[in-house]
Image 1 (cartoon, rainbow, N blue to C red):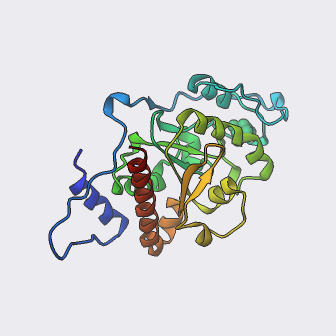
Image 2 (tube, helix red, strand yellow):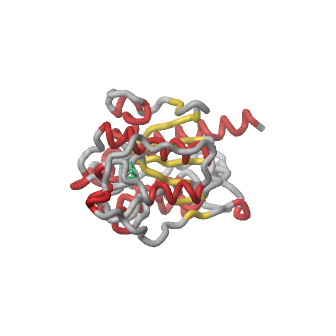
Image 3 (cartoon, rainbow, N blue to C red):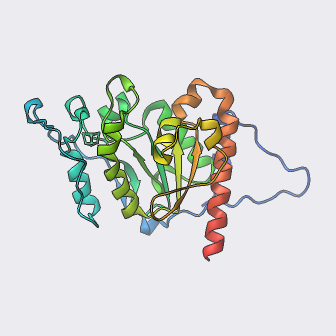
Length: 256
Ligand code: SF4
């Protein structure tokens, strides 16, 4: 698939100068993505019935049977009342994308628009994320996108530790099912949560981290909503994306 002109258009959208070779032009190979026939697209489903307020009880952190499949996992998320966010959500936001993707994109939690639509990273931040991914040869439909929390914190406040503790088993189950080759984490909160650190984002970017028992390679960059507010940092985000792509390509080359 040739993404050259599109990639340039998206780099322009990101506000990033295009690199022009001084000597012989170099053919930029798009990052390999899952084949079209291998794609299984998870699409958001109609809003699931929500528990009545008096049905809410604090349950222990979600017990999930080992090897749970996508369908039952989606149902478990849709019916979850394990933390108080179930009281205020419009619907759960399970995640979206290719269930055979090699890249998993992880954010913090749904915002207002995601809560309304049942899909992560929609609206302007979602469009910028799409542009960022496409700039490294990854159309949105070739990756899987999920948040740590599946329900929106009211007023877009930061997730609370007990909410993360109760919701994280869902993300871990998604990682176990997907077995991604690369995880791209967007935003400070998601990065600090997944790496169990309070180090600032500046110290976490530009390094290769690993996640979970499988030690999946993990790279961190800015949240697109932050980049919309702080366009001067788009250049640094582009550096992160190039680092993630180069790391992925090296990994693929080593395993072939
Ligand atoms: Fe359940 Fe997670 Fe929603 Fe809390 S945020 S109710 S743990 S799905």
